[in-house]
Image 1 (cartoon, rainbow, N blue to C red):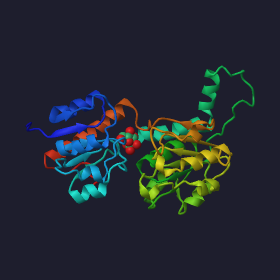
Image 2: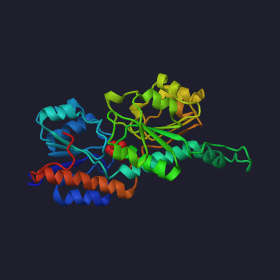
Image 3: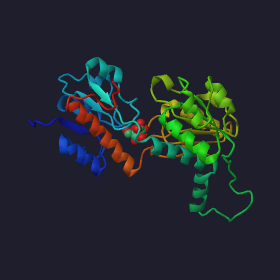
Image 4: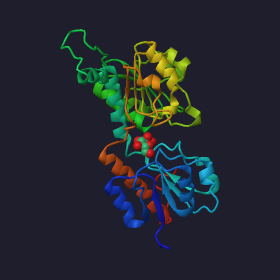
Length: 324
Ligand code: 8YV
């Protein structure tokens, strides 16, 4: 048996990140880059000292409780860890780490991209042009909504929301309001002149753009449902770079189809990679395939951050990014 800890990467990573892991550990790569099924994840729990999953792996209680368990650390590739049953991991003494910070700016950029694409009808325009349906310039063609002096309402005000607020406020002149479990320090509010709104309902009613930045999981499941969508302005835009489960997709498709809200920009879905057919049928929604952190440098940095956590753990040092 190898003296080096056995580590499984459940998906392919960037070359540089895979090389770093392989230089220190006995690494198994997923050559086909297909999501692992429950049987393969259970086998991994028995066979590896550390598993490095992504959002496409459901590390639930049944997987973690696999008899004959060898795994000691789940080094998640990503900041969000709603696909891992961390309470069960904690109970079993399995450590869990994640990759905060390194994807903050990249994901905030994507929130802004969705905001601009949705408000300026970029997807509609490109489909029209590529479909050979563009008849030429005219004053009333595909008119959108400008962001200057509009109000951006952020739900959740962690790292990514704050980075989005900085771009929107200092770059586009937007007013910033936010709702989160806890009000942030006044120095953080001052950076973007952000106003805390205690009730989600008030934020929805008063925002031109609503951008979601809360974690996924049971607590935020369908936080945006039919009732709350009805509170939004008919001209409003909903942006989701957080987790698909935060929004009731069926209710959102209805709200967009009936014009109860104007448009939406989505990067995440309730049942990825399946997208609600009601959304696919609409022109007034921008749909991206979970690209929030998808730049070469960020995906490498995420892999390096997982490596730092694994190295610390197997050197007997504190985890850099402990979840539990
Ligand atoms: C990742 C993300 O690409 O880090 C997260 O929480 O949503 C994405 O940026 C993906 O989740 C990796 O597992």
